[in-house]
Length: 255
Image (cartoon, rainbow, N blue to C red):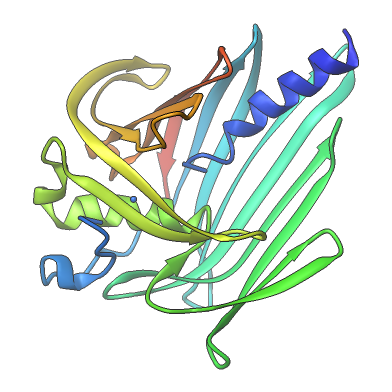
């Protein structure tokens, strides 16, 4: 397999862990949207099948309650070709929980294989800044409002949908401020409606959402979240530059 093909496969598989890894109503991210507290997440472990460019791999997502009252959310994926590691991605977030939802403390993204990448974000609430590190480059960002990381936002989205049925209405736009090691971005998702899908974990009722992107974007992203599993990810599909990637739930267990 050529180096170019390896690189394309690694980038496509990596997308499975950076999109949801991959939204509150109309840019509201706290209890002001409907006046109710967001329910704390339940601990779980989920396994997924990742498919891209004819390759298959297994991904996982694990949310744990820590002894100090904090939460740890981790997920990862690894793929090999002819016994050689093509890509391994490990991503983790630690956060607290208040009535409004997730309060991120730290985030770490590590990728090895064909390409290497290491990124960290630490949230300093005494100085009210996010400290962002990408390889040897460091920068800081002022914290204003509820700013999340690439993983804690998924716990926030699930809690928002659980707490507020109005958010599940078709054409509702869910929006979150998310910081990674490079920048602060607004991620927006549009609710498309309910859909029953087939997964390795059985037939599931889901809420289908699409990522809102620029009109000229060559990437599309669709999520299916399962209400019976507290709106955790049941399926994800992305198309980019003509390449398709899917992540589908195989099993989930609650702690």
